[in-house]
Length: 230
Length: 230
DNA sequence: CCCCGCGCAAGAGCGGTGCTCTCGTTTGTG
DNA sequence: CACAAACGAGAGCACCGCTCTTGCGCGGGG
Image 1 (cartoon, protein in one colour):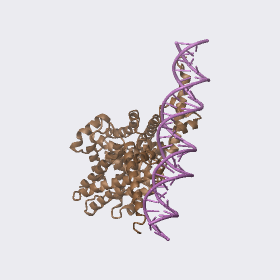
Image 2 (spheres, chains in turn yellow, green, blue, red):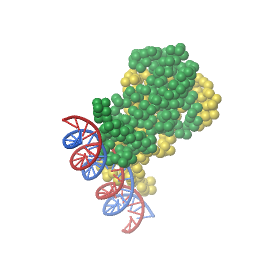
Image 3 (cartoon, protein in one colour):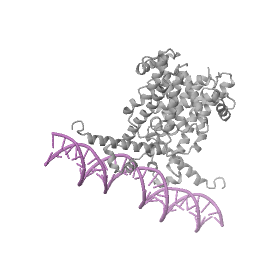
Image 4 (spheres, chains in turn yellow, blue, orange, cyan):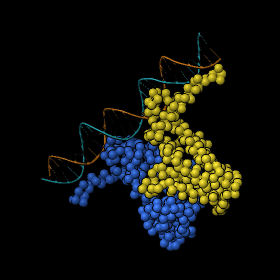
Protein backbone atom coordinates (compact mmCIF):
# COMPACT_ATOMS: atom_id res chain seq x y z
CA UNK A 1 0.00 0.00 0.00
CA UNK A 2 2.95 2.29 0.39
CA UNK A 3 3.26 3.07 -3.31
CA UNK A 4 -0.43 3.88 -3.48
CA UNK A 5 -0.52 4.73 0.17
CA UNK A 6 -2.02 8.12 -0.36
CA UNK A 7 -2.09 7.18 -4.01
CA UNK A 8 -5.82 7.22 -4.51
CA UNK A 9 -6.14 10.53 -2.78
CA UNK A 10 -3.09 11.92 -4.51
CA UNK A 11 -4.26 10.76 -7.92
CA UNK A 12 -7.69 12.26 -7.39
CA UNK A 13 -6.03 15.46 -6.29
CA UNK A 14 -3.90 15.57 -9.41
CA UNK A 15 -6.91 14.90 -11.58
CA UNK A 16 -9.01 17.60 -9.97
CA UNK A 17 -6.11 20.03 -10.17
CA UNK A 18 -5.76 19.28 -13.86
CA UNK A 19 -9.51 19.64 -14.39
CA UNK A 20 -9.43 23.03 -12.71
CA UNK A 21 -6.53 24.15 -14.87
CA UNK A 22 -8.27 22.87 -18.00
CA UNK A 23 -11.47 24.71 -17.23
CA UNK A 24 -9.52 27.82 -16.35
CA UNK A 25 -7.53 27.57 -19.57
CA UNK A 26 -10.76 27.26 -21.51
CA UNK A 27 -12.17 30.35 -19.87
CA UNK A 28 -8.88 32.12 -20.37
CA UNK A 29 -8.99 31.39 -24.08
CA UNK A 30 -12.57 32.61 -24.34
CA UNK A 31 -12.67 35.60 -22.05
CA UNK A 32 -9.12 36.62 -21.26
CA UNK A 33 -7.24 36.73 -18.01
CA UNK A 34 -9.07 39.74 -16.63
CA UNK A 35 -12.41 37.97 -16.99
CA UNK A 36 -11.22 34.67 -15.58
CA UNK A 37 -13.43 33.93 -12.59
CA UNK A 38 -12.86 31.31 -9.93
CA UNK A 39 -16.57 31.03 -9.38
CA UNK A 40 -17.19 30.38 -13.06
CA UNK A 41 -14.54 27.67 -13.05
CA UNK A 42 -16.21 26.11 -10.02
CA UNK A 43 -19.60 26.28 -11.71
CA UNK A 44 -18.23 24.58 -14.80
CA UNK A 45 -16.89 21.76 -12.64
CA UNK A 46 -20.00 21.52 -10.47
CA UNK A 47 -18.09 22.50 -7.38
CA UNK A 48 -18.61 25.06 -4.70
CA UNK A 49 -16.33 28.03 -5.25
CA UNK A 50 -14.79 27.52 -1.85
CA UNK A 51 -13.67 24.02 -2.82
CA UNK A 52 -11.20 25.42 -5.34
CA UNK A 53 -9.18 26.88 -2.50
CA UNK A 54 -8.19 23.34 -1.52
CA UNK A 55 -6.20 23.26 -4.77
CA UNK A 56 -5.08 26.82 -5.40
CA UNK A 57 -4.63 29.22 -2.50
CA UNK A 58 -5.76 32.17 -4.60
CA UNK A 59 -6.82 33.23 -8.05
CA UNK A 60 -3.34 34.62 -8.65
CA UNK A 61 -1.76 31.24 -7.88
CA UNK A 62 -4.04 29.64 -10.43
CA UNK A 63 -3.00 32.27 -12.95
CA UNK A 64 0.65 31.61 -12.13
CA UNK A 65 0.12 27.92 -12.89
CA UNK A 66 -1.43 28.87 -16.22
CA UNK A 67 1.49 31.17 -16.93
CA UNK A 68 3.98 28.37 -16.38
CA UNK A 69 1.97 26.06 -18.60
CA UNK A 70 1.84 28.71 -21.29
CA UNK A 71 5.61 29.16 -21.20
CA UNK A 72 6.00 25.43 -21.49
CA UNK A 73 3.59 25.22 -24.38
CA UNK A 74 5.37 28.00 -26.24
CA UNK A 75 8.76 26.47 -25.52
CA UNK A 76 7.62 23.12 -26.80
CA UNK A 77 6.32 24.70 -30.00
CA UNK A 78 9.64 26.45 -30.55
CA UNK A 79 11.63 23.29 -29.88
CA UNK A 80 9.47 21.31 -32.27
CA UNK A 81 10.07 23.86 -35.02
CA UNK A 82 13.80 23.81 -34.38
CA UNK A 83 13.98 20.04 -34.48
CA UNK A 84 11.75 19.75 -37.53
CA UNK A 85 14.42 21.48 -39.62
CA UNK A 86 17.44 19.80 -38.07
CA UNK A 87 19.50 19.75 -41.26
CA UNK A 88 18.52 23.12 -42.69
CA UNK A 89 20.84 26.14 -42.73
CA UNK A 90 20.81 28.25 -39.56
CA UNK A 91 18.88 31.20 -40.99
CA UNK A 92 16.10 28.93 -42.24
CA UNK A 93 15.88 27.25 -38.84
CA UNK A 94 15.88 30.61 -37.11
CA UNK A 95 13.04 31.84 -39.28
CA UNK A 96 11.14 28.59 -38.75
CA UNK A 97 11.37 28.97 -34.98
CA UNK A 98 10.27 32.61 -35.20
CA UNK A 99 7.29 31.59 -37.31
CA UNK A 100 6.42 28.87 -34.82
CA UNK A 101 6.45 31.44 -32.04
CA UNK A 102 4.22 33.70 -34.08
CA UNK A 103 1.82 30.88 -34.91
CA UNK A 104 1.64 29.87 -31.26
CA UNK A 105 0.91 33.44 -30.22
CA UNK A 106 -1.81 33.88 -32.84
CA UNK A 107 -3.38 30.58 -31.84
CA UNK A 108 -3.23 31.41 -28.12
CA UNK A 109 -3.59 35.18 -27.92
CA UNK A 110 -4.76 35.22 -24.33
CA UNK A 111 -1.97 32.96 -23.17
CA UNK A 112 0.41 35.24 -25.04
CA UNK A 113 -1.07 38.22 -23.26
CA UNK A 114 -0.73 36.37 -19.99
CA UNK A 115 3.00 35.84 -20.32
CA UNK A 116 4.15 38.78 -22.44
CA UNK A 117 1.46 41.36 -21.78
CA UNK A 118 1.17 43.40 -18.65
CA UNK A 119 1.34 41.50 -15.36
CA UNK A 120 -2.31 40.82 -14.57
CA UNK A 121 -2.66 40.93 -10.77
CA UNK A 122 -1.13 43.58 -8.55
CA UNK A 123 2.16 41.89 -9.07
CA UNK A 124 2.64 38.28 -9.99
CA UNK A 125 5.24 35.91 -8.59
CA UNK A 126 8.06 35.96 -11.09
CA UNK A 127 10.29 33.49 -9.29
CA UNK A 128 8.32 30.36 -10.13
CA UNK A 129 7.96 31.39 -13.74
CA UNK A 130 11.60 32.18 -14.46
CA UNK A 131 12.77 28.67 -15.43
CA UNK A 132 9.75 28.11 -17.65
CA UNK A 133 10.25 31.49 -19.31
CA UNK A 134 13.83 30.63 -20.21
CA UNK A 135 12.84 27.66 -22.32
CA UNK A 136 11.98 29.61 -25.49
CA UNK A 137 15.12 31.66 -25.19
CA UNK A 138 17.25 28.52 -24.98
CA UNK A 139 16.01 27.46 -28.40
CA UNK A 140 17.49 30.56 -30.00
CA UNK A 141 20.67 30.26 -28.03
CA UNK A 142 21.15 26.61 -28.98
CA UNK A 143 20.46 27.37 -32.61
CA UNK A 144 23.02 30.15 -32.67
CA UNK A 145 25.58 28.11 -30.76
CA UNK A 146 25.28 25.36 -33.36
CA UNK A 147 25.82 27.84 -36.15
CA UNK A 148 28.81 29.19 -34.26
CA UNK A 149 30.34 25.72 -34.04
CA UNK A 150 29.81 25.32 -37.76
CA UNK A 151 31.56 28.61 -38.43
CA UNK A 152 28.38 30.15 -39.81
CA UNK A 153 28.35 33.10 -37.45
CA UNK A 154 29.60 36.53 -38.44
CA UNK A 155 31.08 38.64 -35.71
CA UNK A 156 30.54 42.30 -35.07
CA UNK A 157 31.79 44.81 -32.59
CA UNK A 158 30.44 46.30 -29.45
CA UNK A 159 30.77 49.75 -27.88
CA UNK A 160 33.25 49.77 -25.02
CA UNK A 161 30.61 50.87 -22.51
CA UNK A 162 28.70 47.66 -23.14
CA UNK A 163 31.65 45.26 -23.04
CA UNK A 164 31.48 44.34 -19.33
CA UNK A 165 27.71 43.79 -19.38
CA UNK A 166 28.04 41.73 -22.57
CA UNK A 167 30.70 39.58 -20.94
CA UNK A 168 28.52 39.08 -17.88
CA UNK A 169 25.48 38.13 -19.96
CA UNK A 170 27.57 35.72 -22.03
CA UNK A 171 28.95 34.07 -18.91
CA UNK A 172 25.44 33.67 -17.53
CA UNK A 173 23.64 32.61 -20.66
CA UNK A 174 25.95 31.09 -23.25
CA UNK A 175 29.66 30.86 -22.36
CA UNK A 176 30.45 29.34 -25.72
CA UNK A 177 29.19 32.32 -27.72
CA UNK A 178 30.96 35.63 -28.32
CA UNK A 179 29.68 38.38 -26.00
CA UNK A 180 28.44 40.62 -28.78
CA UNK A 181 26.42 37.72 -30.17
CA UNK A 182 24.79 37.11 -26.80
CA UNK A 183 23.94 40.79 -26.57
CA UNK A 184 22.44 40.74 -30.05
CA UNK A 185 20.50 37.58 -29.19
CA UNK A 186 18.90 39.09 -26.13
CA UNK A 187 17.91 42.15 -28.11
CA UNK A 188 16.60 40.02 -30.97
CA UNK A 189 14.58 37.99 -28.49
CA UNK A 190 12.87 41.13 -27.18
CA UNK A 191 12.43 42.49 -30.70
CA UNK A 192 10.85 39.26 -31.87
CA UNK A 193 8.26 39.48 -29.15
CA UNK A 194 7.68 43.10 -30.02
CA UNK A 195 6.79 42.03 -33.54
CA UNK A 196 4.63 39.14 -32.33
CA UNK A 197 2.81 41.06 -29.59
CA UNK A 198 2.12 44.02 -31.84
CA UNK A 199 0.40 41.70 -34.27
CA UNK A 200 -1.45 39.72 -31.60
CA UNK A 201 -2.55 42.79 -29.66
CA UNK A 202 -3.82 44.52 -32.76
CA UNK A 203 -1.27 47.31 -33.16
CA UNK A 204 -0.81 46.36 -36.82
CA UNK A 205 -4.52 46.88 -37.46
CA UNK A 206 -4.80 48.83 -40.69
CA UNK A 207 -1.02 49.20 -40.83
CA UNK A 208 0.34 45.83 -41.89
CA UNK A 209 -2.02 43.70 -43.94
CA UNK A 210 0.12 40.95 -45.44
CA UNK A 211 1.54 39.91 -42.13
CA UNK A 212 3.14 36.60 -42.98
CA UNK A 213 5.67 37.87 -45.53
CA UNK A 214 6.21 40.98 -43.42
CA UNK A 215 7.01 38.86 -40.40
CA UNK A 216 9.21 36.44 -42.36
CA UNK A 217 11.26 39.32 -43.70
CA UNK A 218 11.59 40.84 -40.24
CA UNK A 219 12.65 37.49 -38.79
CA UNK A 220 15.30 37.14 -41.48
CA UNK A 221 16.64 40.56 -40.60
CA UNK A 222 16.74 39.59 -36.95
CA UNK A 223 18.77 36.50 -37.85
CA UNK A 224 21.10 38.65 -39.89
CA UNK A 225 21.50 41.07 -37.01
CA UNK A 226 22.54 38.26 -34.71
CA UNK A 227 25.20 37.23 -37.19
CA UNK A 228 23.60 34.28 -38.98
CA UNK A 229 24.47 34.56 -42.63
CA UNK A 230 23.00 31.49 -44.32
CA UNK B 1 -24.96 84.39 -24.50
CA UNK B 2 -24.50 81.97 -27.30
CA UNK B 3 -20.79 81.42 -26.73
CA UNK B 4 -21.24 80.88 -22.98
CA UNK B 5 -24.84 79.84 -23.35
CA UNK B 6 -24.49 76.71 -21.30
CA UNK B 7 -20.97 77.91 -20.51
CA UNK B 8 -21.07 77.76 -16.74
CA UNK B 9 -22.56 74.30 -16.76
CA UNK B 10 -20.22 73.13 -19.49
CA UNK B 11 -17.15 74.45 -17.73
CA UNK B 12 -18.06 72.71 -14.51
CA UNK B 13 -18.60 69.55 -16.46
CA UNK B 14 -15.16 69.79 -18.03
CA UNK B 15 -13.57 70.39 -14.65
CA UNK B 16 -15.25 67.42 -13.03
CA UNK B 17 -14.38 65.24 -16.00
CA UNK B 18 -10.75 66.27 -15.66
CA UNK B 19 -10.82 65.62 -11.91
CA UNK B 20 -12.18 62.14 -12.52
CA UNK B 21 -9.49 61.42 -15.08
CA UNK B 22 -6.81 62.75 -12.73
CA UNK B 23 -7.96 60.60 -9.86
CA UNK B 24 -8.25 57.61 -12.15
CA UNK B 25 -4.77 58.23 -13.51
CA UNK B 26 -3.42 58.38 -9.98
CA UNK B 27 -5.03 55.07 -9.12
CA UNK B 28 -3.83 53.64 -12.40
CA UNK B 29 -0.27 54.60 -11.57
CA UNK B 30 -0.52 53.09 -8.11
CA UNK B 31 -2.58 49.98 -8.63
CA UNK B 32 -2.64 49.19 -12.31
CA UNK B 33 -5.49 49.05 -14.76
CA UNK B 34 -6.90 45.79 -13.44
CA UNK B 35 -7.28 47.28 -9.97
CA UNK B 36 -8.73 50.57 -11.14
CA UNK B 37 -12.10 50.93 -9.45
CA UNK B 38 -14.82 53.42 -10.26
CA UNK B 39 -16.00 53.31 -6.68
CA UNK B 40 -12.53 54.13 -5.40
CA UNK B 41 -12.31 57.07 -7.78
CA UNK B 42 -15.69 58.27 -6.54
CA UNK B 43 -14.57 57.91 -2.93
CA UNK B 44 -11.45 59.94 -3.60
CA UNK B 45 -13.56 62.71 -5.08
CA UNK B 46 -16.20 62.54 -2.36
CA UNK B 47 -18.84 61.52 -4.85
CA UNK B 48 -21.36 58.74 -5.00
CA UNK B 49 -20.24 56.06 -7.40
CA UNK B 50 -23.37 56.48 -9.44
CA UNK B 51 -22.50 60.11 -10.09
CA UNK B 52 -19.51 59.13 -12.20
CA UNK B 53 -21.84 57.66 -14.79
CA UNK B 54 -22.92 61.19 -15.65
CA UNK B 55 -19.42 61.68 -17.05
CA UNK B 56 -18.34 58.27 -18.32
CA UNK B 57 -20.91 55.74 -19.44
CA UNK B 58 -18.81 52.84 -18.20
CA UNK B 59 -15.51 51.90 -16.65
CA UNK B 60 -14.23 50.87 -20.07
CA UNK B 61 -14.98 54.30 -21.49
CA UNK B 62 -12.98 55.87 -18.70
CA UNK B 63 -10.12 53.50 -19.48
CA UNK B 64 -10.36 54.42 -23.15
CA UNK B 65 -10.01 58.09 -22.23
CA UNK B 66 -6.93 57.24 -20.18
CA UNK B 67 -5.52 55.24 -23.09
CA UNK B 68 -5.87 58.19 -25.42
CA UNK B 69 -4.23 60.46 -22.87
CA UNK B 70 -1.38 58.00 -22.47
CA UNK B 71 -0.78 57.87 -26.21
CA UNK B 72 -0.75 61.65 -26.27
CA UNK B 73 1.66 61.84 -23.36
CA UNK B 74 4.03 59.38 -24.99
CA UNK B 75 3.77 61.13 -28.33
CA UNK B 76 4.55 64.48 -26.73
CA UNK B 77 7.59 63.01 -25.00
CA UNK B 78 8.87 61.62 -28.29
CA UNK B 79 8.26 64.88 -30.13
CA UNK B 80 10.06 66.83 -27.42
CA UNK B 81 13.09 64.57 -27.70
CA UNK B 82 13.11 64.89 -31.48
CA UNK B 83 12.90 68.66 -31.35
CA UNK B 84 15.48 68.97 -28.57
CA UNK B 85 18.16 67.64 -30.94
CA UNK B 86 17.02 69.45 -34.06
CA UNK B 87 20.51 69.94 -35.47
CA UNK B 88 22.03 66.60 -34.53
CA UNK B 89 22.74 63.82 -37.03
CA UNK B 90 19.81 61.48 -37.73
CA UNK B 91 21.13 58.49 -35.80
CA UNK B 92 21.66 60.59 -32.68
CA UNK B 93 18.15 61.99 -32.96
CA UNK B 94 16.74 58.51 -33.53
CA UNK B 95 18.48 57.20 -30.42
CA UNK B 96 17.36 60.23 -28.43
CA UNK B 97 13.74 59.59 -29.36
CA UNK B 98 14.09 55.90 -28.51
CA UNK B 99 15.54 56.79 -25.14
CA UNK B 100 12.71 59.24 -24.53
CA UNK B 101 10.21 56.49 -25.26
CA UNK B 102 12.02 54.19 -22.86
CA UNK B 103 12.17 56.84 -20.15
CA UNK B 104 8.47 57.56 -20.55
CA UNK B 105 7.63 53.87 -20.28
CA UNK B 106 9.78 53.39 -17.20
CA UNK B 107 8.24 56.46 -15.59
CA UNK B 108 4.69 55.38 -16.47
CA UNK B 109 4.75 51.58 -16.43
CA UNK B 110 1.03 51.17 -15.92
CA UNK B 111 0.18 53.59 -18.72
CA UNK B 112 2.63 51.67 -20.88
CA UNK B 113 0.89 48.44 -19.95
CA UNK B 114 -2.42 50.07 -20.74
CA UNK B 115 -1.50 50.93 -24.30
CA UNK B 116 1.05 48.28 -25.24
CA UNK B 117 0.18 45.44 -22.91
CA UNK B 118 -2.76 43.15 -23.31
CA UNK B 119 -6.12 44.81 -23.96
CA UNK B 120 -7.58 45.18 -20.48
CA UNK B 121 -11.38 44.97 -20.80
CA UNK B 122 -13.22 42.31 -22.73
CA UNK B 123 -12.28 44.17 -25.82
CA UNK B 124 -11.59 47.87 -25.95
CA UNK B 125 -12.68 50.31 -28.61
CA UNK B 126 -9.71 50.63 -30.92
CA UNK B 127 -11.27 53.14 -33.28
CA UNK B 128 -11.06 56.14 -30.96
CA UNK B 129 -7.50 55.34 -30.03
CA UNK B 130 -6.09 54.90 -33.52
CA UNK B 131 -5.24 58.55 -34.25
CA UNK B 132 -3.62 59.01 -30.85
CA UNK B 133 -1.61 55.83 -31.28
CA UNK B 134 -0.18 57.04 -34.55
CA UNK B 135 1.45 60.07 -32.98
CA UNK B 136 4.58 58.29 -31.72
CA UNK B 137 5.02 56.53 -35.00
CA UNK B 138 4.92 59.80 -36.90
CA UNK B 139 7.95 61.01 -34.98
CA UNK B 140 10.06 58.19 -36.37
CA UNK B 141 8.65 58.62 -39.84
CA UNK B 142 9.33 62.36 -39.85
CA UNK B 143 12.85 61.82 -38.58
CA UNK B 144 13.61 59.29 -41.28
CA UNK B 145 12.00 61.39 -43.99
CA UNK B 146 14.23 64.30 -43.02
CA UNK B 147 17.29 62.09 -43.23
CA UNK B 148 16.10 60.88 -46.59
CA UNK B 149 15.83 64.43 -47.89
CA UNK B 150 19.37 65.08 -46.66
CA UNK B 151 20.62 61.99 -48.47
CA UNK B 152 21.55 60.29 -45.24
CA UNK B 153 19.50 57.19 -45.87
CA UNK B 154 20.98 53.95 -47.15
CA UNK B 155 18.76 51.78 -49.27
CA UNK B 156 18.38 48.06 -49.08
CA UNK B 157 16.40 45.49 -50.98
CA UNK B 158 13.21 43.65 -50.33
CA UNK B 159 12.04 40.14 -51.17
CA UNK B 160 9.68 40.10 -54.12
CA UNK B 161 6.85 38.59 -52.08
CA UNK B 162 6.84 41.66 -49.86
CA UNK B 163 7.03 44.29 -52.60
CA UNK B 164 3.27 44.91 -53.06
CA UNK B 165 2.63 45.14 -49.32
CA UNK B 166 5.62 47.45 -48.90
CA UNK B 167 4.30 49.69 -51.66
CA UNK B 168 0.87 49.76 -50.04
CA UNK B 169 2.30 50.61 -46.62
CA UNK B 170 4.47 53.32 -48.10
CA UNK B 171 1.49 54.85 -49.91
CA UNK B 172 -0.50 54.85 -46.68
CA UNK B 173 2.15 55.98 -44.27
CA UNK B 174 4.96 57.89 -45.96
CA UNK B 175 4.71 58.38 -49.73
CA UNK B 176 8.02 60.23 -49.79
CA UNK B 177 10.02 57.30 -48.41
CA UNK B 178 11.21 54.21 -50.28
CA UNK B 179 8.96 51.21 -49.64
CA UNK B 180 11.68 49.07 -48.08
CA UNK B 181 12.43 51.88 -45.66
CA UNK B 182 8.80 52.08 -44.62
CA UNK B 183 8.74 48.34 -44.08
CA UNK B 184 11.88 48.51 -41.99
CA UNK B 185 10.42 51.42 -40.02
CA UNK B 186 7.28 49.55 -39.10
CA UNK B 187 9.32 46.57 -38.00
CA UNK B 188 11.70 48.78 -36.03
CA UNK B 189 8.74 50.45 -34.37
CA UNK B 190 7.43 47.07 -33.16
CA UNK B 191 10.92 45.94 -32.18
CA UNK B 192 11.53 49.09 -30.18
CA UNK B 193 8.42 48.44 -28.14
CA UNK B 194 9.49 44.86 -27.68
CA UNK B 195 12.70 46.11 -26.11
CA UNK B 196 10.87 48.69 -23.99
CA UNK B 197 8.04 46.43 -22.85
CA UNK B 198 10.39 43.58 -21.99
CA UNK B 199 12.27 45.92 -19.68
CA UNK B 200 9.16 47.53 -18.20
CA UNK B 201 7.32 44.23 -17.70
CA UNK B 202 10.31 42.62 -16.03
CA UNK B 203 11.37 40.12 -18.67
CA UNK B 204 14.95 41.36 -18.38
CA UNK B 205 14.99 40.57 -14.67
CA UNK B 206 18.29 38.80 -13.95
CA UNK B 207 19.10 38.81 -17.66
CA UNK B 208 20.07 42.35 -18.54
CA UNK B 209 21.49 44.40 -15.69
CA UNK B 210 23.10 47.45 -17.31
CA UNK B 211 20.01 48.37 -19.22
CA UNK B 212 20.83 51.86 -20.39
CA UNK B 213 23.89 51.01 -22.50
CA UNK B 214 22.19 47.82 -23.65
CA UNK B 215 19.19 49.78 -24.83
CA UNK B 216 21.26 52.51 -26.44
CA UNK B 217 23.19 49.95 -28.42
CA UNK B 218 19.99 48.20 -29.49
CA UNK B 219 18.47 51.53 -30.55
CA UNK B 220 21.54 52.31 -32.63
CA UNK B 221 21.22 48.96 -34.34
CA UNK B 222 17.56 49.67 -35.04
CA UNK B 223 18.53 52.98 -36.65
CA UNK B 224 21.14 51.20 -38.72
CA UNK B 225 18.58 48.62 -39.81
CA UNK B 226 16.25 51.34 -41.03
CA UNK B 227 19.07 52.79 -43.11
CA UNK B 228 20.27 55.69 -41.01
CA UNK B 229 24.03 55.79 -41.22
CA UNK B 230 25.17 58.84 -39.30
C1' DC C 1 -37.01 89.18 -11.75
C1' DC C 2 -38.95 84.85 -11.04
C1' DC C 3 -40.10 80.50 -11.72
C1' DC C 4 -39.60 76.42 -14.61
C1' DG C 5 -36.81 72.73 -15.99
C1' DC C 6 -32.78 70.44 -16.66
C1' DG C 7 -28.53 68.72 -14.90
C1' DC C 8 -26.77 66.79 -11.09
C1' DA C 9 -25.70 63.99 -6.91
C1' DA C 10 -27.30 60.62 -3.70
C1' DG C 11 -29.03 56.33 -2.19
C1' DA C 12 -30.77 51.78 -2.55
C1' DG C 13 -30.37 47.72 -4.88
C1' DC C 14 -29.03 43.78 -8.25
C1' DG C 15 -25.92 40.35 -9.55
C1' DG C 16 -21.29 39.39 -9.64
C1' DT C 17 -16.45 38.73 -7.65
C1' DG C 18 -12.39 36.85 -4.39
C1' DC C 19 -11.84 34.97 -0.16
C1' DT C 20 -12.76 33.08 4.79
C1' DC C 21 -14.82 30.28 8.16
C1' DT C 22 -17.46 26.66 9.85
C1' DC C 23 -19.43 22.28 9.69
C1' DG C 24 -20.49 17.56 8.27
C1' DT C 25 -18.67 13.75 5.58
C1' DT C 26 -15.50 10.78 3.42
C1' DT C 27 -11.28 8.14 3.43
C1' DG C 28 -6.90 6.22 4.18
C1' DT C 29 -3.82 4.79 7.72
C1' DG C 30 -1.49 3.71 12.22
C1' DC D 1 -11.13 0.07 14.49
C1' DA D 2 -10.70 4.51 15.61
C1' DC D 3 -8.58 8.75 14.67
C1' DA D 4 -7.01 12.44 11.89
C1' DA D 5 -6.39 14.49 7.71
C1' DA D 6 -8.42 15.84 3.51
C1' DC D 7 -12.45 17.35 1.34
C1' DG D 8 -16.93 19.62 -0.31
C1' DA D 9 -20.78 22.58 0.73
C1' DG D 10 -22.77 26.60 2.43
C1' DA D 11 -23.14 31.02 4.51
C1' DG D 12 -21.18 35.29 4.79
C1' DC D 13 -18.01 39.52 4.25
C1' DA D 14 -16.38 43.30 1.61
C1' DC D 15 -15.90 44.89 -2.70
C1' DC D 16 -17.01 45.54 -7.66
C1' DG D 17 -19.76 47.58 -12.08
C1' DC D 18 -24.00 49.23 -13.19
C1' DT D 19 -29.16 50.80 -12.95
C1' DC D 20 -33.12 53.10 -11.22
C1' DT D 21 -35.47 56.40 -8.55
C1' DT D 22 -35.67 60.46 -5.88
C1' DG D 23 -35.01 65.03 -4.61
C1' DC D 24 -32.39 69.19 -4.73
C1' DG D 25 -30.37 73.47 -6.61
C1' DC D 26 -28.66 76.34 -10.07
C1' DG D 27 -28.90 78.45 -14.97
C1' DG D 28 -31.29 80.72 -18.21
C1' DG D 29 -35.55 82.00 -20.94
C1' DG D 30 -40.07 84.44 -20.29
